[in-house]
Amino acid sequence: MFVTTAGRTNPEMVDHAKSLADELSVLYIKREKRSIKDLQHQHGDECLVVGKNRLELHKLGTAEPFFFHPNLAMLRLKRLLQGEADPYLAAAGIHKGSRVLDCTLGLGSDAIIASFAAGENGSVVAVEADPAIACIVRNGLNHWQDVQNEIQEAMKRIEIKTGHHLDILKTIPDKSFDVVYFDPMFEESVLESNGIRGLTHFASREDLTEAALNEAKRVAVNRVVLKDHYRSTRFNQFGFSVMKRKTSTFHYGFIETNN
Image 1 (tube, rainbow, N blue to C red):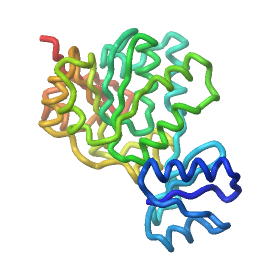
Image 2: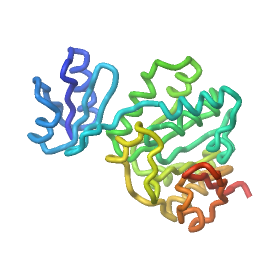
Image 3: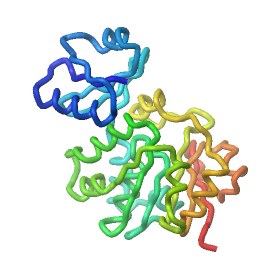
């Protein structure tokens, strides 16, 4: 991977790009009016582009980039503020003061919902295996402004750890979080919105493992939660109780750990 700037750049964007290149231990390449496609053809790698208002990750040979946008979370937060229930919060039992470990950050939508529900006295730690995705989402969470203050503060409270979720789970003491959450790539493709399609080019395809689930059970005080396609075999395979929703293509399952 390498880092460059948008076509119309300025010194601040160049400095930001160089800083991110150092953070990710990759090359910074001057844009010099070249297209992203030409730069990628020359360097043979994916590209992180620093723009004025967002970061974009371009996969080699793919036209659709990945970038942060909290659109899914904003729709769900609007419903919460109107007094409607959120199925993730219900399945996980998240409330004010909850401590949540999200093992599959992705776009961060579920982490935002959890942080908002947990409030100032709660905490959300989210794990992302891909350093570039972690960088983009962290930048978005910390700098997104087109929301009310309460939501903005909830986004900023999310702590992102970069690494494989199993490796990170192994370092966490017993019963450190109330909830441990998994949202792996579905066994069957479900695209919830345009905003998630760019992520599918970069997201990990690794399946949920018995080892990771055992570590999650050790770490969770109350529940381990899984989001998956309604036809997924993982629910039965690992013994999740499923909250079925007739109109949805995905369900939430949970395992009680407080017995």
